[in-house]
Image 1 (cartoon, helix red, strand yellow):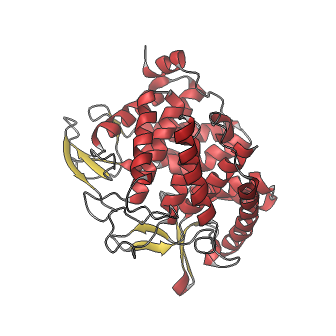
Image 2: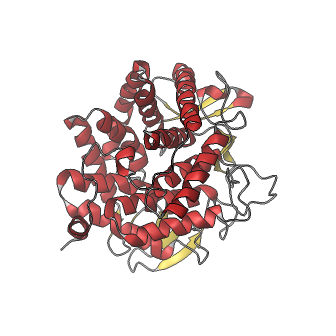
Image 3: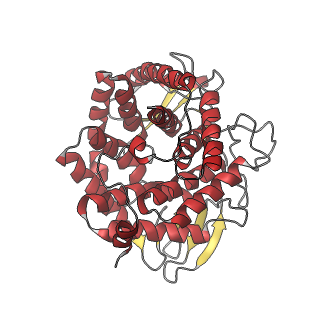
Length: 404
């Protein structure tokens, strides 16, 4: 019996293509407050207005990456860049919450730019690129065309799997190296979806095998995660462990911890494997109990960053964490669930203040300020980021869905 069949036999997983975040989160009753629901509604309206500013600045054939305020410069990308799916994904979330047709129309326009990436076998980021865009489009208004794009994307992603290593290759590198980064946990949802749509367990088995390999090799004894593991592609042995975008190889890069947290929650949801829930809790507890987590719960860009408490915060890591914790709160006992829920609520309240949320018409049309992309490379440092916006809006949507 394959892994997928076992999961279906022993657990009632969510099998519908329109299985929304609110339908998945059916555990603890944590009493979301109407004040935060009202804050979410206000944030959706503000964000819709902001994205119309961004829409007006965006070249027709490009996708937004970030904005450099000092130069009044909108930095863009082509469709093959890993963040290309977040802009249409955010537009679709905002359309759901506001009903603003202009946002939906813009998302449909941009999807055309992304369409060719369904055949891109040179990247592990097809979950980010295609599932956050076409996946949301298909969830809102299912269509055979969207489904086919997503299935082709899943095939492209699966082509990067190495059974000897037991993982999906992340960055292409020298033939003697096989690089896997913690971010790749975020792309497994596309594979889980593909198995649910087709009944072909291959995608599910690849996703579970990748999660198992990551759990075995990426994490330190304190439950923090390395960013990068380099395997021998022939033997599967670990050759190197490092943290490319963090402060040091042994440091806890904040967004990497958030990717791992979110990814293992996804894996638990789709498999009901208890070990994935336990792993998600271990990551969450490492983050929330860390001595360097600020009181407002917006993490420094690295938990071991130099110059704390004067180090930069990373709003994008906070947004990812908040969205993940809201889902995790539904799968655990009431005491832990309340802790995770309250922390997510605190993050959302603080991200919605003037410190992190842009004033109308500013920030190039982006929603959040103070994201940190790649500090060691000096790129996207203390700027807005499309994925920060995406997970902020997703977290607010999840919060509101729980309230209803």
